[in-house]
Image 1 (cartoon, rainbow, N blue to C red):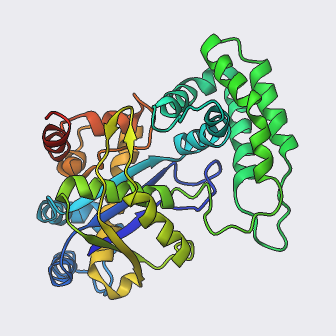
Image 2 (spheres, one colour; image 1 turned 60 degrees about the horizontal axis):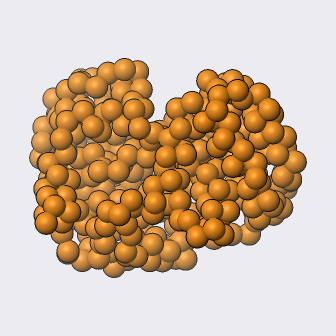
Length: 348
């Protein structure tokens, strides 16, 4: 059983979010091992609350305790970082250019084309069309695609999104970016699928769902062909249908740019109140640590003691554009578990 929790989750609110990075953390410990470590942290930090939280662990006065706890978690933890702006840009490419390219027999996901297009837009969109125009484009797309299930909510039509897309295209003089914006414009008819009230189980823009599928693949890279389950904190978005989708998606064989990714033997995802399970509490602490190391990276720091200590816990796949602070953080040092898996599976 692998305990999971997240930090920085604001559902489908990606543009106006308070936290630019979504973090998912998980720990592979037996319940009694997790409880022992949790109780040791409580005693060492003089915490009275029965539930150990990341806010307490990250206090400067508790740094030594936190670092020792992370050392004890070595080899049994995973931290996934998701740049929300990049995630939204990737969805823009995936939901418009993706189905358009599929009509011509091209899968932009497995070929790596989608990643390349999203990378370029994330790196150059602000500069090539102007920050205000780019932010307006992403904001209108976010508003269009997010789910509207409340009776008092008035979902937008495609017109606002089309207007911001055309404005960005008309005011872009840079050839490569203009070509991608042209591809988006030519694919705009697929935006009609998201117009109107959307009574859906799977929320398109909630990063938790695709992240958990990716996390499962990364655990397969860490532990091999071993069956496992996820235990997550209670969350309304993780309905039985959504959990089934995550399990099915993670177990589907996948190759990107010709490289076969690990296929995990994820059996199920169950939910439990974090107050009742130390594994989820440790995952919460780890998620808070992930948000802190991401904050440091986005401020230009990559060699803080906390970043060095958790480096081998970082997920092999960071959801950020190439060369971005989160990408630099992940690539700063070798990930030994990833390199070992590649040597065993790709270099044979």
